[in-house]
Structure formats: structure tokens, C-alpha cells
Length: 72
Image (cartoon, rainbow, N blue to C red; front, side):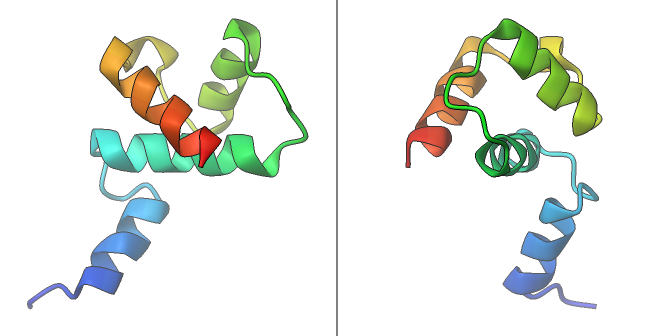
């Protein structure tokens, strides 16, 4: 079965595809929906726990991408 782009996007949003991009998308969505105006280390770790992600699996480049997503 050929996957349509919307199917892949839906799977990514639900965490079925665990690419770095999907992890960053889930994390940024969670943080955008929160009432936080500042994300420090403690808030980042809590958000990762809520999204079932390892906070120490992100590279510096990943964190820069996350910051860009949050600032958009």
C-alpha cells in the first residue's frame, strides 16, 4: 500500500514514526499548548517525560531546531 503524505503526517503526529523530526514535532506541540513562556532544563525534561521521550537523546542541532519551531 502506498502511503499518502497525510497518512505519514498523521502517523508522525501520533508518535508511530519515531524520527527525530516527529519527536521534535510532538515536543514542540506539547510545549506550545502549555502555558509556559520560558522553557528551562526542568520544563524540558518534564515535557519529554510527558511525550515519552528521552530528554538526553537530542543533539545540540535538534535543540536548535526545537527552538526554531517554538519561535515560529
